[in-house]
Length: 241
Image (cartoon, rainbow, N blue to C red; front, side, top):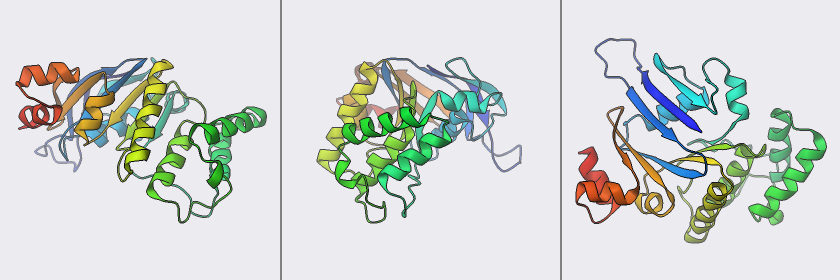
């Protein structure tokens, strides 16, 4: 479970600057997909960086399965798998080498890592590119590899920042199926996306952020009802206006 309580973070060092995150509070439950949506500049990426421990809040607290990343960053990261807005694949490494490298960084025993690598190659249907260098991969192949790296240690909490960007229809459908598998396995999935149709299709709860604050949260159906909207996209526009 991921919890954010009264988070505040500013940049620029001037008191007059509006905080990027301003008293933000929400929870992402186990066995559910929680969408984090908002306009550009609303504080979504800063919030994800606070959760992963890449930034420290000025006030408030994050809990990842009860662990505060600001106090115990390694403990929290062992409970997290994160796919950020920059995929960060190494062009000269093969898919298999990526998985082994990131598994070793997580301290996974060799036997466990080998079995996990085989499982992820099966899960993402990557056997054809298992021993190819990442340079020249399609966008879908790059995204699959980045996501496989993020979950190499089978973390209970998964953060995905715009995972469907640039994917074709088939790859996007495969991603949706994978997210549903994570949810059904009891994992906590926190998904940040601008694609409202995708969010409406997979998310149990949607947290709408604007100007660094949570302005609404609930199921897609609840947000549409409260905004008298025919789609989540219409509700999003109304709520963030």
